[in-house]
Length: 300
Image (cartoon, rainbow, N blue to C red; front, side, top):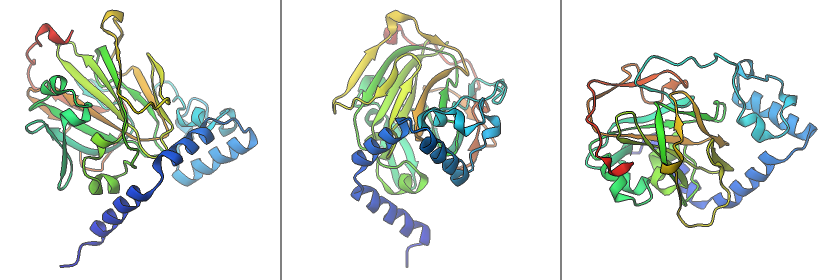
């Protein structure tokens, strides 16, 4: 029986992703996005707004000419009150679309039909950390080019450590997610490990992609580049960095995906969520149905 048109499209998208010079494209895009070309920069921003339907009415500065670089525009702030925070245990950390969510089954995370990957692989091979999420929960959220690209805290947390995991730079759009095996555990990523109010760890992973020039956090600044090709880790236990729910924690300089890992326990995701559905930062994401057990002291 012939493959459906969607399956053929996904297969072609995956083949093209394997062939593209992804590193070179990403480096070139990063240089272009960071350049300050005045009139040329403003023209590029105006084209991008029209091409992708960016809603500038909600930007703190809606004037395209006010941004010195494309990166400044892409990581633009919003007007105060543009993203009210829901009263919920967990809120959406980004604007974007729902890719997948649910239970981590035997340490494996669902990516798309026929594809999954392990929490250990996503976390850069850290089996001890991954063990905390065995039978836990995950949510994968995709940021499209038109979206607001700052990342916020889904719940309060104390920063324990950050790991930059080198990897590929495949596109993370839905077609590629359906076609490239283990996509989110293969791409370059920044793993941010937090301790929740109950003492248990949870993780927010920033996944890089083709033409994502860099990723940054509020406590470190730009994490990549450099891209030395080896795993890098920073510890923050002694610095007592604590961020409240809804606080900005990082940003993408050009768009990508976030993956949230949560520990085991009775958790109910928003009943209105649908695959591919649109979300906004601050909307209710999930609620714990009972107070989860406290963590052993080893993570702190």
